[in-house]
Image (cartoon, rainbow, N blue to C red; front, side, top):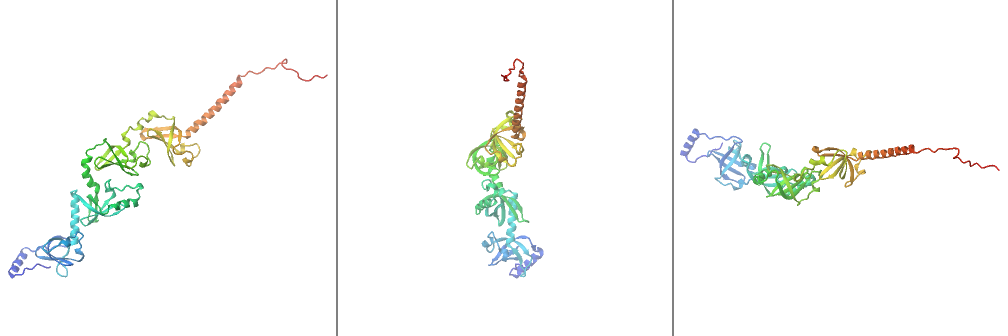
Length: 409
């Protein structure tokens, strides 16, 4: 173990006495210690440890992604990690790389504990999110932790298109918060949403559930659309909240840039949920006053599915005619019998307001038509029979019979 040796004899005696009275603490492998740079070489550093021990940093242990090595000068303080208590030269083998790495993880834990906002550069992207870097540690910013402004809205969720959008952020810097730190698994996860919540909390607090807002459609996805309103706020209108009737695609109702009104139905931290349909009355509340079981009504076939027909009844109400209720004959494909946009008559089979369901039937109308025809035939037969019975028979007498037989001459 190398010691820093004073040059004068008197000092030697004093130093020996001091060391005997206060022996130096010998660092153990893995310890992170402080020292002072004694000399800076091309491929090594000599480090003074507490004035009595000497250590060395060399080779790959000098690798420094943070650039600290380049700025080191003689006499500068330095933090290093012990990798060997004594090498072949009698010096303590030290690592600058490991110390910086350890300090980086310690810093990350503090950032997570204190919920501190930081700025990180985006260095790469994959289909799940963005690769970022903080203090020499590689981290991950998942797509689910992006704000709505940066969320890759791709029709159909095509992963290749999502990756294409994410790669546009490489080289940019994002405000984030550290949400997961696991040094053992080398896992660092950050969230842009978490940082955004802090900034938006005051703005969001100006609104409450039930408030009606005006804004513009800023994005459309398979599960709904986003609406920007107020001071940079954005809310989601889920597809189930776009209209009272069935909606197959949000794009059937809105397009990006449309000016809309929406009602706030939920606020959850940074998430704002909106509704178009709740701006008006629920049409199902009065459905029992409009229709009754057995009623014959007209409707437009809005959608044909393998299992039946969705029928637009007006007033944002839709009924379902199951495939088994389309015809008394076996139906393999509803499109062989009807087409979308066609207006037809249906019989109401059932009404379930709580389940928002009206059951319809075309087949039942066939039964009615057949019964009506049968009844008409029966009525005709009865009428004919009654007429025959009411006619009086003709009486034939001898006087009324004229002999037309020729007489012989």
